[in-house]
Image (cartoon, rainbow, N blue to C red; front, side):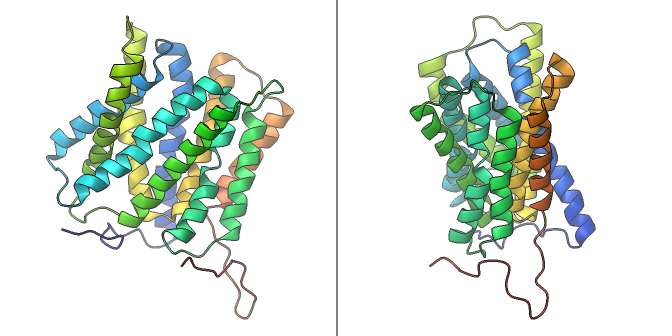
Length: 313
């Protein structure tokens, strides 16, 4: 069976349905914002890719067992591509970025993803290029930079390239997820299971050959891995891929700006860190970009177009 972007679950109609879907989808990046706290406080150090593997492969296989649905036809290779872009390749590049750059710089580089998605939506999905959402995507980069960058932030060429490549990988995965949709008879749990399993299979060789497994895993680490796998893995990706199918792709990508904001707020609440004036301003800018990017100003009758009406090709 050949599936196109039109063979997807219909999106909700009306502003109420879209607002509800947006809020539910936002739970995914908000949950991902807990990753830094869980990793730094509970997990064994030096094994980020093992954490990514436990977050993806076991939960993906569990979803396959629960739903008893496997890909058919060209969805075998599509699932492998989307699993690599959204999870396997993305986490691998994120690992390189985390090793070469301070966390604040890595988060700022990663926040360019919504702007990349806006351009890919024009080039791949043939959507009109929205200057409104592209502009707010760039504003989000500035906001995240104010939130997480410190005066001692240093740069590394390899780390910067890996961070940009990781953002581009995730952005491409989000865009292709929107383009290909999912089969009408396949629910979001089965779909997330396909991609989590595929992403985990991409990560497995790297963990076996490069990183290995932790020598000891205490009770706290078990709880941390369980949180990342169940809530930050299976549940979050079900909500995320469900939202991609029902919301504008660039607006969905902007929700990812929640992750560094949540991580910063948790640092204040749990680790007794302190907000600076720049961080407060950054949170305001980031949240403004996230909310404003969910809307597209309507053009009044007879008024000049506010969006670039170019199409790719």
